[in-house]
Length: 533
Image 1: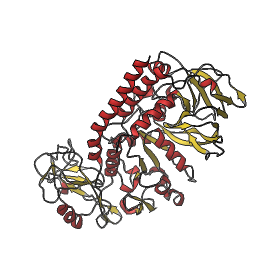
Image 2: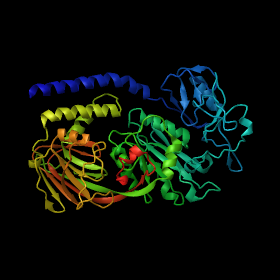
Image 3: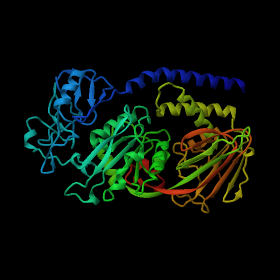
């Protein structure tokens, strides 16, 4: 059995080196050189792709490289044009108003492909140079000849119930000198709008999720929404971004988390300190995206942002309650010193053994690739490689002899196992539904109970993912104690893995979070959603 193990190890090393070569130039490409011009409100970032159909908004020269304001969309090809344009052309955040009515913010040229004139309903934007106009507030496009027939007043478009008008919010900068983020200082309810018909959308983005998807998501939502509504959580904390909620009880909002399962857990943890907690929807950018699958938001987002579709799904979504659990880990003394205890919260699941071993190996390898971001292809390839490696190694064999499991005060007798998972939601392992239909132990997301199941090996996990095998149900309960003795074991919670030294893990109910269930999802996604079962 030694030769297959050597082959798998060599394959892992080769894959890692190959990914280093492939990803290094790609990552550099997505590092943007931000330039902020506070007087005009622009926020310029480097264009990441060569496109011969772009033209400088000032000198009108064709562009192969340059910078773009990801708030309003104006483009420049040189630094000279950048500073000249910024001194004469304000961004969409600098509102033009008449009697509290907002005026269109027209940007000339560089229209999206397939644009249609709102006046004559003919195609527009085609041609050489800066052709026709787009409103940076309502996204309407219009021919130059039709522009004066549509009027100057802007209603912010069909999705105005999610957008903060620029003249009804005051903003401030938060973060550090190199990592600045616009956040709400104060906000008022727009005139002529009732609180029940206006719920601004705040998008919390983890830019490292999904490779380039995180950066592209930031830029796309900044184009559709007021930039203060799109938060880079690498720059400011969730509490800082949503602090305005405490002082504006008359205004409700939606929160859309763009990231993976770990990002969602982080956001829900941070929002727990708010007196009012807005409901949370998900734009899945991670690898497993199990909670997103359960709530009908899909198995993973890729491609362009369909803003109107997202808004429609939010309007038709339903608020549900989701249990969350506190996890306290008390370490045993080592060499006379007790390590600091650990406290985390669980949203999806926490596990010890073989699946955590695979996740830990994947994370360690991924972090060793310099300056590389997470990508689904990389993660799935690493998961497959480490899973195959463990089929031969059985690193977590005889797990039942290394732990003691106590649920609701009762010691659970364990069969031969290599993994134990405490489950809070119906999905696990990127879409697997491990808990069988047991009449005496039904599963729910808000019953203040968890389920515990075991797996025999990484090969058993592969069989479950193929639908040819089931998990080993162990228990259902409201409190759990897991004693680990002997050597350190791999553990993971909501996709974040670590090596756990001997100690005791205690799990108790923490609270319930408000999340949005997308009950107008596609037929394929309905088959994955727990609420359609």
